[in-house]
Image (tube, rainbow, N blue to C red; front, side, top):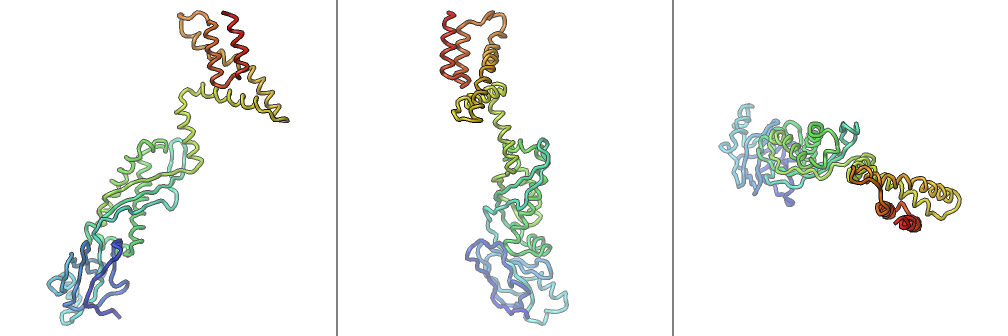
Length: 330
């Protein structure tokens, strides 16, 4: 049996409740002459038969046929209520303040077809801020159509819209995940524009939309890091030579026995074979620089030896021996 109400109000001690339905289920029996109190930043909406009717803003209101015309018309049209002193209805109190820093995130990975890496899984999260702009439209679309009125359900409903638009925008906005770092802010703007119209259609206004992170699986992140490192190195040929020389030197200096000793011997032999090639490679630019340099001088060779020492390709002992030999040519 509906509860008879003569005073209607809702106090939210937290200030964080977006929508409150009275009663939580069913309908109230409300007497004509009852008092309705709408607090600061609130709007009260009478709701019946799946649609919003009369709207009340901040203040204290005495309910009578004159200030609830839509509800009175509905009751009269149903053929009852003229002689009755009570009417049945639900009342929704909506918080009209700006709700900041609402969180969104992907509960499941988003599949993205990358032009270079094929299908990859992405996860994302961020924040957004909204405000109820049209209370009647919001209730008709979200409450009346979806049957949603709990705060968590409303937030989940909006998050689902955001994730859906993010998924579709990613495919239109970029071809590969490698383009993301330079287009992060532009992607957030594109997603916001794509959800703005949809939120307005729900009676909401979106004030902020931010993407805090879009992450990839570890194996994809390793590919991205490798590619970034290659770009940072610049001359890959010189980088490979350097890495090879350092690896061989480390192996040659390993004093351990057994297999490690074999590696050391092999590394020493390898270094012996490699040094002439590296010397030739180091001197090649000098020889190919044109007709200005006809021969390689001992000073040029000495400079190349010093570069190999600095790179770690030569030990100090090897450098000293070769340096002494070159100095004998002066």
